[in-house]
Every structure is written in structure tokens, then in C-alpha cells.
Length: 375
Image (cartoon, rainbow, N blue to C red):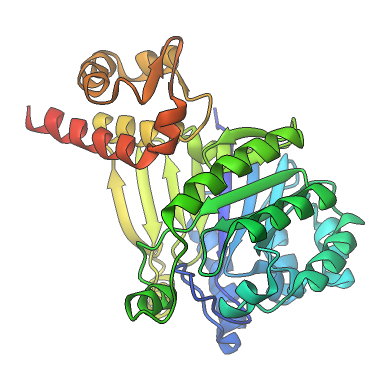
């Protein structure tokens, strides 16, 4: 019996490259037609016999590409019964024609990359819109979409408490169904990281990040949003069904450049290199960069990594059923290390302190994994 799966499709085209972006994307539109031609060929190489539960078009900026490509893509995949189909967007790329086409194709969730409502920060990060464009195109999108997410980043250069408070006021005004508010991570090799290292830009003090994130939690709660994952809030019933597949360590396929997938105990990612992507498909090969059959402890570790991001964590009964004695062995060690950061009753989840120090919890999970491997 076929199980339902999620489907992620990577569309790596942007009008401009943002300073903080480390996703594989390009501003070279000359290869757009070729990429979609090969993406359709890749679909032929992959077994998509499972019923598709959710679809997520990510990027890049999927709403930047020609509508004809999105239409051909939807003719190829059988996603008529998907409960949630999301398309990522930057505000300046939206038009009435595109929104109408997406709606007609059955796309029912729009994720808008806002990052901040501050025009100065937007300009400095190479974003091609301002508050006026955001508001105008948000209300345009409202004619077609009753499920909209707004994405934000806390802690970009120039961010401060006044800007954050203004962001929260505008979230309250626009009243989207879903809000993602991520803390900026400077670990990745990006143009922004290089500017920071050269001292040409500076990040806000960490004290602001701590106080700011506490303010986000408090204010979004007052607005009626429920925090269901470390960085995600939703009105009741509007949690992102596709991302929940990731966090529950369930099955999904990834199509396109750099896309990742997880089917049963197979974990894979596709190549990040355009030439390699095209060459492998020319040879009728699925363009894998990484492909691994996970051991039980690999699967268990990944399940903890993903599931502990959820505020409600993971059901203990589920872990015991899937992993048996490995569960007991693993948690005996982990609980000694982070007893004040995790809560175990009928579920395992992070405490408030654990959510604040989630990076430490994940590091300890890796330590336990290595101890068990060595043992």
C-alpha cells in the first residue's frame, strides 16, 4: 500500500542575489528554459507513484519564473489531491496574472519572503522591494489566497528594537495565517558573512537578539498565533503541513537542483551544480550528490533532530515502537547531559530553556550518537 508523501521542487532563479543567501540560485535566466526541460526529465526518472499529500515550490524565487514553466510542471506531477500546495515568493515578483494562474493550478498557500519591513535594511541586503510594494502586493494576493505565510529574519545588520516593534505592528495589521521568524545565522559562507569578517557590516548585539525573540514570542501569542515549532507560528489549523512532514521525519521526495528527500530509511540530496545536474540527467541518472541508506541509529538521530524542533516534541510511544531498546539506551545517556533542557512524560520535548539553547541540545544528541556507535 502506497503511503502519502510530500514533494519539494527547487526552482533556483532569482532577480537578484541577496547578501545573506546560501541557497543554490542564479540570476542567469538564459538557462531557465533548459532547467525546466531537465526538471521534467528528472520527474520521469523518479518514481512518483505515491499519493502526493503536499507540494512545496521553493527557491530561489519560484514566482519570478515564467508562468508557462509552472503550468508545465503541474501537468507533469499528479498533485490534484494534495491538501497543501505552497509557492515561495518575493513581494516584487507578484502580479495579478501570476496570482490568478497559481490559483487556477490549485496552489493554495503563498509564502512571502519579507525579512523585515525596514526599507534601509532591505536595500542593504539587496532586496528589490519596499514597504509600499509589500503592502500593495500582499493585498493583491489576498484576492486569491486565504493562507499566507510571512517570513522574517531577526538580527540582520541594522536591526534594532524599534524596527522589530514596527515589524510586529505590521504583522498585526496584515494578519497573515502563518508567521516564520528566524534568527539570522552567520555560519554560512555568504557575501554578508564576508562583509562581516571585513568589518564592513556589523551584526546587532546578542542581548538584542535574546530580548527581541522573547518579544516576538509574547506579541505573536497576544495576536492569537500558536508557536508550534522553534521559529514558526500559526493561526489554528494553518500550521505548514509540508514542513510538518520534515519535522515528523516522514517521507518526501525532492526534485531539482540541491533538493533533498527522505523515503523510508533513504536520505538523499541532489547535486548543487547545474552542469552536473544536466549531465547526469542526459545519462538517464537521477542527479544525486548524496545518497545513503540510514542505519537505525541514523534514523533515530534524524527523528530527534527534526521532532524536537516542534514545541510538542515527539510521542514516546512512537519512538519505542520504531526503535525499541535503542530508545532506552539513547535517552538514558541524553537525559544525564541535558536534564534541564528536555522534558519527558508521554512525549519528549524541549523545555523553555531547551528551546533557547536548542543548538546545545542538538550537539548533545550528536555526542550520544557517537558514544553509542563507539560502544
